[in-house]
Image 1 (cartoon, rainbow, N blue to C red):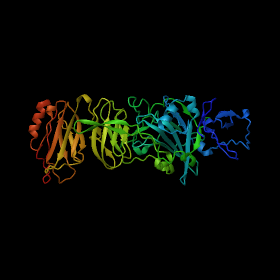
Image 2 (tube, rainbow, N blue to C red):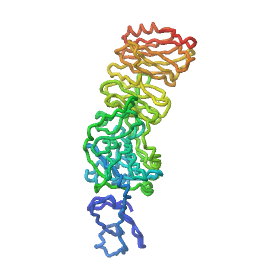
Image 3 (cartoon, rainbow, N blue to C red):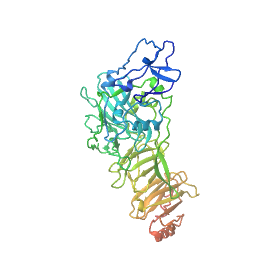
Image 4 (cartoon, rainbow, N blue to C red):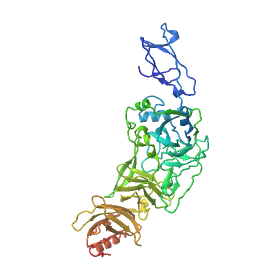
Length: 546
């Protein structure tokens, strides 16, 4: 029969279809929880008009009216978290159907932003799912947001907090909050020893809604992610997001555990478990069925673009993320809750050079890009990155994009001795080249090192599948380039290098046996680069050219 708009309230609803036979119908009024609801019975006049029952000569026999109030299991409410939002937050947990049955991303986003704050609070909804693991009951609290307004903007957002409870004692053993996807480590608080009646607090990241545990409900992040060896709190700077982040940025310190606390959380809206508008709803099979069997929301990707340098003096845009999330029940951690526990494995670390690196975005280019941000000291960590050959790209405003090709085995430290040297745009130029063997065959995955005039190794990378390499260096220095293979019996007889600068006359190819001539030409042109090739003789291990 379609959707009807009430002329008095402006609310949309789908009327029940009443036939001459006895029939049962249900109307879900949970969206108006805590409000006075008027039941109005209307009769359709087939001449095309609507009229009130009292104005019509027809009669409807009504047997019973039932008001069904679903009860929330006591333990689900007992362990429900308190939520604390950023002061600039405009999106709060709600139902995907908060306004109508239209789940399109643009519609939900626009309709939600159009709500007043009070309307948003009235629509506040948290979904729950429980799993019995044998020794523990895991209470999963899922939060739907109409939009993800962060670096990786996308339609819709699902975030979650898991509370693990020992069945024998009733004690909370751990609380885990989701912290984005990919290389970010989820935030975990183990053995919180909460006092009776105390509910754990959760700090909600502004815009992206990642969750960080707050044991004392005082706005201070509390985690025990000791698997990372060292942890530091960081912020995503305003020039990227305009919001603060209470999520752990982890990095490795082999000697001890570093704990640096943020100041108390920016005091936005706090919504606690016992407030009237704190609505809990179970994820039921009927609810899941409303999504049409789709794994994720059917909406377009809205990516951000990374500047990626490629050989030939050009850059290409690389889209990062921006895809709507998969639904909770399609994720492995939904029925296997231990999958959410953060495990430090296959991680990649490094430090971006410079004094103002907090807004540097570090991206591992693979089938699924992994990205994170450097902290105020330039440190970063990416977790659970698949093994293999990858490119890392670093973008930071005011600096030329940094790129390094590397092989990821076990745990990997990027750069030279962990330092990724980035170059200011005004002094950046490229060293590009191709590594070949004595038969002119290209050498993929050869190690390329670049040394400055003092002999310090500042840049390293690998050749790609075409034997080419690219290093972004500084025009303030003179560099020496070497190529090394991982195969002990191999000899690198020929590496052709290209020095590219603002002075295109300095672009020269360095061929086997002509290093001195090439060096003299380059130094005479702009004193930009001093390059030579080390030929390695496998039989003796002696360098022919130093």
